Image 1: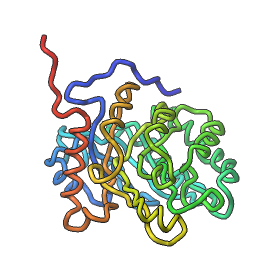
Image 2 (image 1 turned 45 degrees about the vertical axis):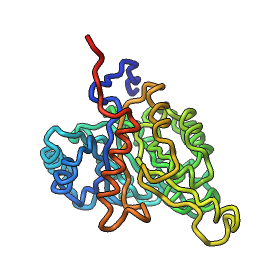
Image 3 (image 1 turned 60 degrees about the vertical axis):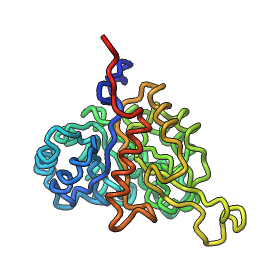
Image 4 (image 1 turned 90 degrees about the vertical axis):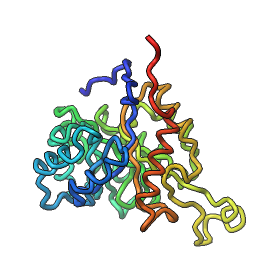
Length: 302
């Protein structure tokens, strides 16, 4: 079994909660070296659907060299459909077995879905795939963290990922009884589902192993006048600092529960701070989160 989280929290220089961003494996070490200078403290390295021809050992070595001790690799991720795609499931195993090369112990991604049937009917296949992967994770001291994104799916017709609602999480945790299984949580996806994220975080925090720094803004004028079925957008994904979530309260909840880990900004979604303003938005989000974390760390007098 995985070791339990220590109740002794090292807050020196805010090491208990790192603030960083996402970077695709395909962007290479050069991207990390350009981003770390802006003060990012952690990086989640990600792959879409497959690792393809990625040399994991080489990637780990180059990535760690690029950040030169200024940041950490908080996690690695594979975002495909492991319940329908055997290669994606194999790539999950590769990352679980090699996460230590990056100096991390969290592997993130989608839980997958059988897209021709309701969420609950995917559970037997989920047990088949992640029952085994949980054993591999336990043997390697790794935590599996499912992103809570619905990918445009519903309960009746899920897409890519069944881990998008509290009801599904309860089924999944009961079906594979392992502390290696948890969540890559973010407030944005819950707001898109009409959920107030902060009360939810309090309930599931013991199973939150990584956090995506992504927020949302609800357009209440459109929602109240047009409803959910108008075809008009009523909620927008936002970079932290531009959305509706109170991240000061969110981080306070984490600290009150002695949570340790990383909040990594998931960029490339904000409808305003995008294109030429992408990095501007992400760095603003980073500095905003640092303020929400309490500003600069000030040691107590001796």
